[in-house]
Image 1 (tube, one colour):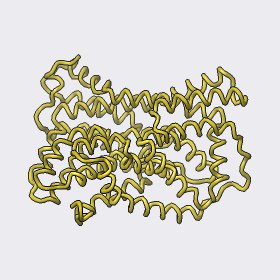
Image 2: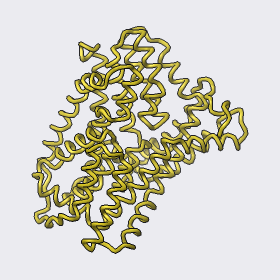
Image 3: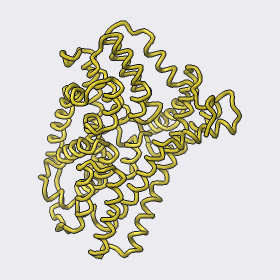
Image 4: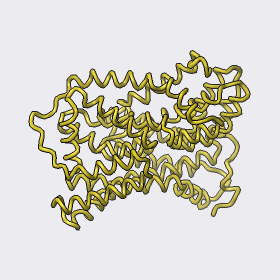
Length: 433
């Protein structure tokens, strides 16, 4: 247990944000300069930024600073994500070893025409995420299949992974059971159905435009001339995972059921022996090691930013000169966006600034349904394009590519953000603006 004075953030400070800039400079800027996203390991970038965040903290001994950093890394949300990563790694590798992914890819190639593979994958991702309310769960379920399709059709792996990740944020933003929707509506004091109505008017046009693009982009996609026959029993684990996810079962329970079903199916079909199953789970868990290390260091570093007054600085600066309803909406968008940069968790970002956003909305007459939509949409936008968010790290790990290689193809989150910005600038939807 930490002392109370150790958990209370210091006064607002721009300098507190510097670890974030160090990370972005070491990882993103350097990668862009050398035009190689694999040159600087993201773990090293986080190590440097984490050490820097501890070094610049004032008023406590080095031991107390490290203890506080460790407390941030051991945050409940961080540990929950690590459990999901562990289970996802075990499921993905055991499903691959047993042949479930290949069987599911063959089924997809049989069902969907060549020219609708991209659009179909995007629709599936949107539908599943809308049903389950979690982008991470959707990415875990669909990314291995998407990568398998890319390998069979010659498509770019980061591009097709981005299709899944982009669609995953559609549901994360709109679903009634999404934690971001719940947090946004609760902090703003509006009904979920009302927020959904306003939010859908803003983001559905973006989804339609992206879908049209994928339809045209898919005209040049060609499946292999010979598709292997579908081994139906091996599809069962994925059907169980997708079915339980759509039914709203907790993502950890979904993954545990997926792991058990791959084991049972693999043993029955001869896909692997008992020790082969256990070995594949161990291999999958070990493969998540880098992702777990990144998540722990990110949690600690971002907690140091909060503790040193970084988020307080953002709040003060963005709320200082509001003088119109449009300015109030822009401030709410900026608040949640910057908070998301500093927390790498869209739900936590909404909870952090939700009360302040409601005060701003009440003071300047912003419709609470619109403020809830802005909070949710801009938090999902930032979460979708930062290379250290759980969704990008998970997608990159499952696809074995760099997060930055995926981000440049995230057309839906980017267009969603543009539509949300235009809704503020042009006061749309009129009835709620």
